[in-house]
Length: 392
Image 1 (cartoon, rainbow, N blue to C red):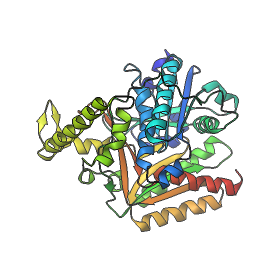
Image 2: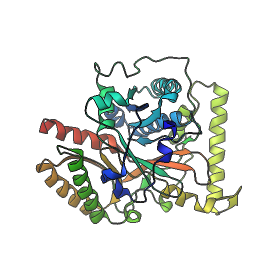
Image 3: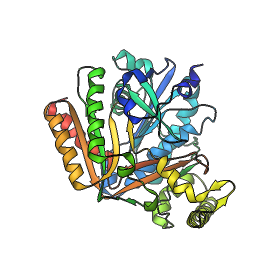
């Protein structure tokens, strides 16, 4: 019965519930945590490969989700990686999909995907937990929220060269496969409507998760005061979405979707994807209704189905705003930091990157957003420096 744990959780309508611990449920005892991230992603970013880093993170989610059509799984994109929770029955299949994605990342992008699976009881023995809630982003998109410190513990464990070795998959096997159906990366960068797009990461500091929740509630409220309603600060908006047919910009999708396939299959996919892009442009431009899909609405659906704010025990947001707004936010968070109530990082860019996971065009399509040129990964690096200086 626990296999359907996530799908049976209540769905809340407001992001603010992420700071309300009464809205969470404990992850079942027979569930596991998948943690994946690109090792030394900063070097890849500095070399201009942040789009590749993003698509590998989304490929982890896609490969695991495609293992089952009957179960809903909680997942979260983190910029240079991803986190999912799965029931025991998916462990072996998930391991193969993750090993295949690790191999793909190495062979196609020369990047090391660090990945592993941690049992929930390992987390609980360390006094942490994985609490799960969910809230509605749009008609089609319901997003997970995690609390309890367990996700962060699992991620750090996988990164630990010694303690994490029994949970991490260090080997690379050649006879493994993964299904990346639905993964797409076909949009130009989305320019900020207000001058800049920031990636924000905030970690509250307090002796208990109840006290942390109170701090998060205050910070979420202040962000809302500074940046206004979601519609005014969303990094993705319909008029800013432009399809690309640039070969270099489409190469990350091509490398991922055609991994371990021959020349002719790669060529066929290349031609097919470009034809789809051209047809999509025509359908959206002329607002046609084909096969029951109102293509004039498609870009608006993308905006609605975008994960621009989320919570996994750490607050993560991608926000479009002005320099003045960002400076005001930075002043507020710095005061909180001086009071030892939080650590944080802010990466500033002028646009957003979108990576997509499309189940169907009618509405079941989900879009992972990050700030350009470093996004969450560089914001996290700033936060880690604060943690190090504070001796935490």
